[in-house]
Amino acid sequence: MSTFQLRYALEPYIYTEARRTYDTGTAFVHPLYYDYPEAAEAYSDKGEYAYGDSMIVSPITHAVDPSTQLAKQSVWIPNGEWIEWTSGKHLSGPAMVERSFSIRQVPVYLRAGAIVPMQPPMQYTGQKPVDPLILNVWPLADGQSSSYTLYEDGSDSEAYKRGVFALMPISATQYGDTLTVEITPVRGNYPSMPSSRGYELRLPADWPPEAVLANGQALTFRPSDSNTPGWAYDGNTLSTIILVASHPVTEAVHIEVRRGPGSLSTRTKLDGFAGAVVRLHSAYDTLNQEWPFAWSPDPLIEGDRISYRPETAREELSHFAQRYSAAKASVQQLLDPVAHLPSDQLSKQLVKYNSSQIVPERAQHYRVSLESALVQLNDGTPQ
Image (tube, rainbow, N blue to C red; front, side, top):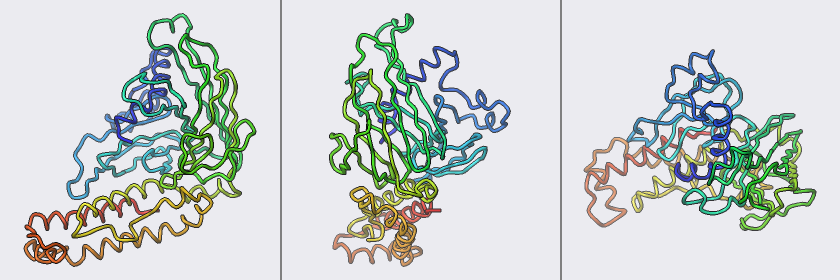
């Protein structure tokens, strides 16, 4: 998802936080020293800011390294538990950490357990009704609860000043290996308020469930049908995606996600997995751009097997670090013979893969691509 797409997807969250600004007088985009006045780092890192109640953002304003296509960023993590959106990595604050990002990534950090409402893809504000309403629930600790109240109004008048709006409280609780999410009936109304809507629950960076129930009814695993109520699993981000059928907004929806025994206690094994997969795919794309002189070696091709068979997640992930190391070794084997070879000699060597003339600049680009792929893989190495 591009930054532009993410901005539009977050509109329900942004609109709710804008209402909070109206009620409190505190801008929802504000410096961190508003929330952490005693922390010196909240003053020194002037580019980092809070984005509503659940997020902090640290935009990258300098160029990526041309040889790696990554930019390093020092980020201050405030007190508490936070999760990096792009990688699923858990970070404990207060701490100053150095992270790397591609040009497609924005450093966004969420409070552990945060509930973030989103909307389906749209080209402009209000293009279509927000249906289904997407709810991202980030991992909670055992016994932890979190809540968020979605705000909505007609968005086309000042009737909200007279109390013409609706609130929808949402809560999540983790007890052992079971997560429950409650969507409470709306309070209030406005003229264009939908009478019913579906819900899409997204649970990033966690094990797949053994069972999912919506209002007591079991939902079916549907790996390839995103429009039918049921649940799916994204093996690249380790996210459970639950689609609940349309319900009247005046009725409660209770979702129960049951995972296998020991899932919560072994969740740390998943830490940063999504970030490693992103680097794996980036290296894959970088190498394939060099075809026919190079292409992604077999160990670099990480399929979507977990998405189609979530029950194999533990077995697949138990071998992931080994496969990742094999991927790095494969790229290193491609790079070693050409790392210090003069460009004219490298050009002659590459001709055997293609009968056309290889100019030194093209040969140098090939070498840089191999180096870039290896750096990306090193950056994403599972911890």
